Image 1: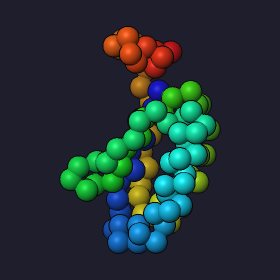
Image 2: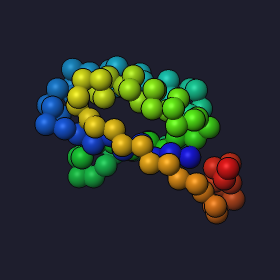
Image 3: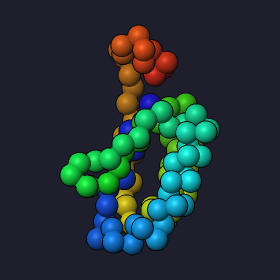
Length: 95
């Protein structure tokens, strides 16, 4: 399982221009079953995603396709978590 942090850079003001592409990229991640959760980093620092069922290499390649990443609007950070315990509702995340 991975947590993907997408932290705004000094190019944050350009986000509006690439928002449709960014949203389409997120949708593709959910449709593929890779993303299981997304949300905003507060206060207005960027976004975060929880990814599951992908290799690190595949996830890194997919993250690079995000228009926000490609245009330098956000800097991605991918954190890998080896889950060892979860509520039964999240048991699918245990590897």
